[in-house]
Length: 136
Image (tube, rainbow, N blue to C red):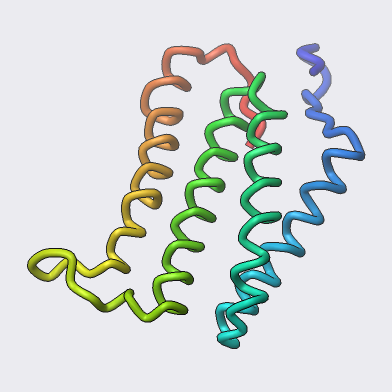
């Protein structure tokens, strides 16, 4: 990154990483298409490459806290989304865990963890490290 006052900083992503990110989007779309059309095998099979690539992307961007936190939030979102899809496919989404909480509501755990990761970044890390360039 270039911190010269006369130029804008540039964050470069290696082409092989960008290709992986683009492929990740394809897998994610097929997972959600499988969910939407109730094609259980497609939806369930696409969880694995979608989730694995999101973990790899988060790992590869770990040197930038902004990238890491956002990519961890995406991984948690995919986890919650995948659990929710499986709960619907296997028809246990509406079963009661306790009180008015159903198994579908358990997807709120990884969704909430994703929100907490981003809250940590924006409310704590970014304030404590104002000199660090934000990549998102």
